[in-house]
Length: 472
Image 1 (cartoon, rainbow, N blue to C red):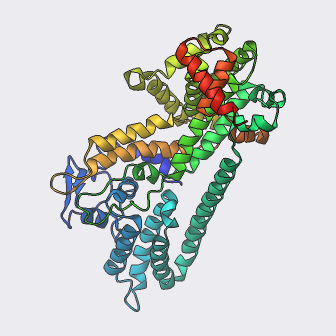
Image 2 (image 1 turned 180 degrees about the vertical axis):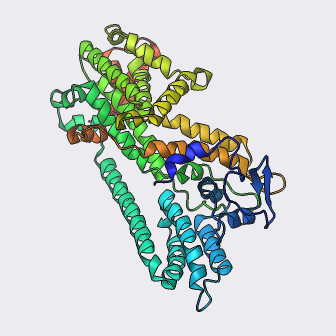
């Protein structure tokens, strides 16, 4: 996506300034500016503002912002149909013997708009109606002049490649999830003495941090920018029909990434609770502290937080005799960096530092910025909740969507970074598929390692032994 890295820089706090770019006059009404920045407009006027003409092409930041946010009001396939209709009608593409000179002026602009749409929001085109509208418009342009057929063909092939890659990724996720089993179930067939553990698979914490970064960057790369918006779609109060995404809420890649965070937390807790001897458990804790520290150095804040979360789970944190053998100074520093107080002030400072480093990076490694993803979603959620989508006039609140686009465009830059580290398939396979304990099984393992300290814990231990061990 060649156009996206510039988005974050181009989206200033004031939004799209019409003095900076070639724009139309407000001839359609319904578009309102403040200090030369677009702040609101009717949906119809905003759609018209997206459509190029012979002497006008919409600014790229406007294209991204509107395509991102418009799905709160209109389904992408309906928007595509309207854009195609306006292009055909205004440029008289349906008329026999369309003026080739005029076509050569407008066709590159229409193709550029379609290219930006298919490159930045390719998942929209999994919809059959969407693809149909796209094909019809491209056919009109390509049949009008041989010169555009190659461009149309390249755009179509690129889109199909992206959608095929996505389908393959989704199939891989299904296979991975199918192979994951509960660790307690595995113990039924394999004695504990021959169970593999993470330190046996990879005894170098730096290598493990690098392999975690591989997983993070791969999963990030498949999240479409629109998923952040679709996660919070509500019914549009001016829409008499059902919400435009009530049957179409596509956030599966975003959800898969959140599920990965949870899996990593449980894997860390499982690896710590598994060993019988406390010196072995202490060694695993120190190992994960070193992994977390390297994640911080890399800029992989999501794995860092998942590891800290796993180590702070009650079944792990209650192992006081184990923790007494751990040198916790490094862990205390990491916890301080990810301290949630003052709205994660320390983490946000570190994130800004990593972002700045990535902007001036001389190597792929320095470009890596993997945010604490749950907090990113929370930030976008609160932005969505505190600002109305529409103003009292019924106009679309475009100031809100400039801010939304700023946050999402920064993510777009981060997700395009290629992982510079060498892959180790054995370690990756373990991280993705090794059986983990459920929460109850973690508590049972914890009590078996260091006995209950009070009546409540004793009662829970007895209950867990009765319910869980009877299944084995």
